[in-house]
Structures are given as structure tokens and as C-alpha cells.
Image (tube, rainbow, N blue to C red; front, side, top):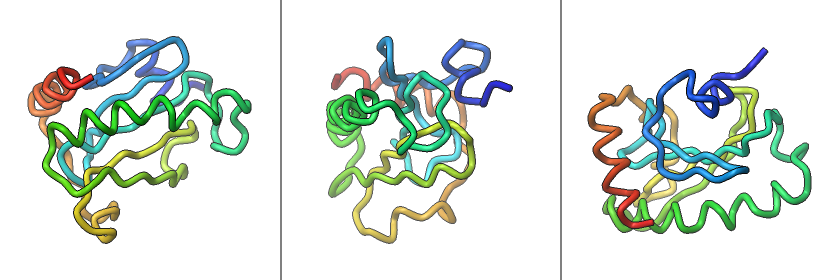
Length: 129
């Protein structure tokens, strides 16, 4: 069975896309911890980050770097925090969250975002890529 992320990759579910190439997709989280909270996912449906093929795992951060820089350029923050929890969706994903303090990396702060707000912010972030 396809994960929700695979359905997003195939265009069956819409997303506020930030970046896409043949191996990765990045989009804004619909339940952000903070505005600008994005995910980057490898396209192959692999559940656990350490089960990724070496090339995908090695290039994940390299691919995330310009996206994180673009988020940081658009969303005021001290830095982009990274988190791999990997329990909520069985498809490897890296959370990129604008933070000012380590306590900001907390899913208790997450709340649903308006789709129009996500798409508007995604467009502004893409301008920095």
C-alpha cells in the first residue's frame, strides 16, 4: 500500500512544493510546528532512514541544504533545526523546522495550516532557491 508521501509524489494529493528532482521532493508540512516547517523525502518508498540506499542517504543533506537556506532567507529564525522521527508515516522523511531555541523542535506546537497560506509561503521560499 502506498504511503501518503508516495501519493503526494504521484500528484494524487496536493502539496505546497518547495523543490523536486528525480530523487527527492520537498514540501511544507500541513501541520507545521512553525511557519516554514518543511519535509524532504526520497522518492523511493523506504520506511527507515538507515535502510535507504547509500547514495540516497548520502545526498539527503546535500539536497536539503539549499532548501534550508531558502527557508531561512524567508522565515525569520536563528537556524533550521532538523529532525528524523520517522514514526508517523512509514516513508523516510527529514523535518526542517525554523527554530530560535532547541525547545522549538516539539510536535506539541504543531497545528493545521491553511492551504492558501502554505502555497503563498512556498512560492516565497521557492524565490530563494
